[in-house]
Image 1 (cartoon, rainbow, N blue to C red):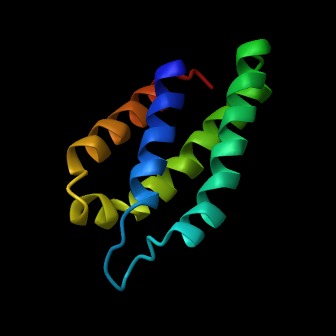
Image 2 (image 1 turned 90 degrees about the vertical axis):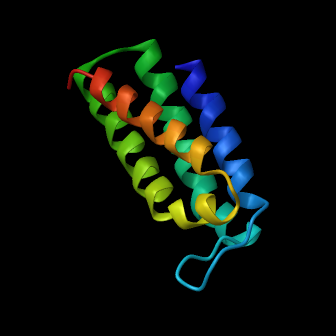
Image 3 (image 1 turned 180 degrees about the vertical axis):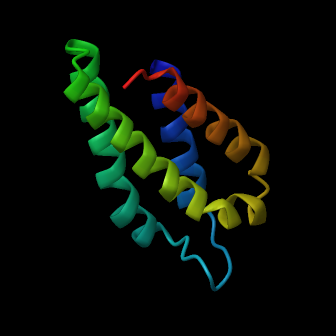
Length: 104
């Protein structure tokens, strides 16, 4: 769990410092506006799930992971243009592993 938190923070930081093409806005203000609520929701859901691994908390955590994954995938272009595609692929793989690990 800690690894996914660290990875999310690193990938968010990488996206904040780059700018990409017309299709995706990778400016710092836009990324912060979109990513911070997702990251906060994910951390809160993960914390709740770690404290109480009920079915409800599992589903909430899984939903938060899926929302963050969607955001992450929508910004692949930023990773490609900034030379961060390996980190992006690693992050996506970690998200997929965490989603697969959840049994809910």
